[in-house]
Length: 113
Image 1 (tube, rainbow, N blue to C red):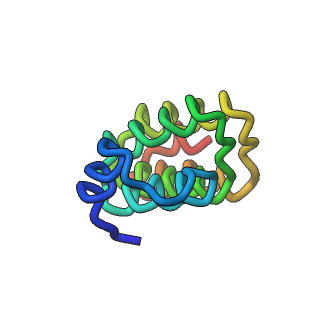
Image 2: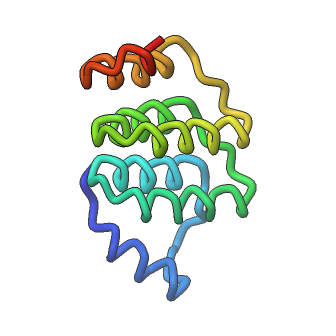
């Protein structure tokens, strides 16, 4: 959950993975980056997943959005939502609830609507 992303990156660059990078691994890395609020790493691994043809799931979307929304950066939250939509991940009520709750906690009722 709060893995060593620099170590993962080192192995990736060396091609030292003994297993194929699949949806579960990409999800785990992106979720870990989000929980560490390392959104540049999350974006990098999101792009690698996209290039590899991996379709990420709503769990990843919700966790990353929750972490990004917690920073109060509405633009970044919207950008992440659009990235996942572009990959075919459909937001649900929980997804929109994350965005709405974040805006409401900051007192930004216009964005919450």
